[in-house]
Image (cartoon, rainbow, N blue to C red; front, top):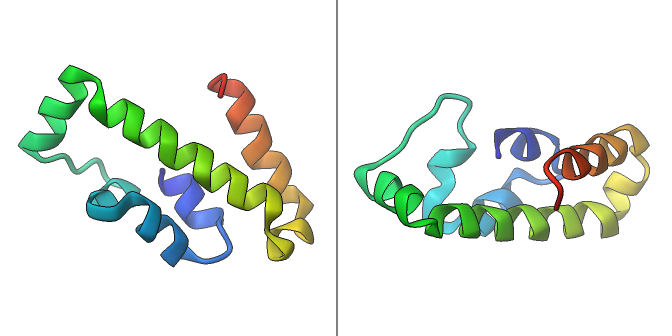
Amino acid sequence: MHLLYDFICDPNIMIKLLQNYSHLALRKNLFSIKNFIEIKDGTLQKFLEDVYKKALKHVQNCEVIFFNKILYKFVKSFALCINL
């Protein structure tokens, strides 16, 4: 998530999408016990996949990012790598 946080046109968009999980945008891995429980039951993965899809949709439709094609190509190739 921190890669999207670094490259998206407005970091507040990622903070809004991550809601109470903004700590997951940090470069260092920081997990709570709640996060570990959610990892085990699969809910954190589903949440993060949803956040990623919303962020990617923003990237594809953002006029600021449109003019920065290097960023767009990076995000799109990343999505292909993780099969979203």
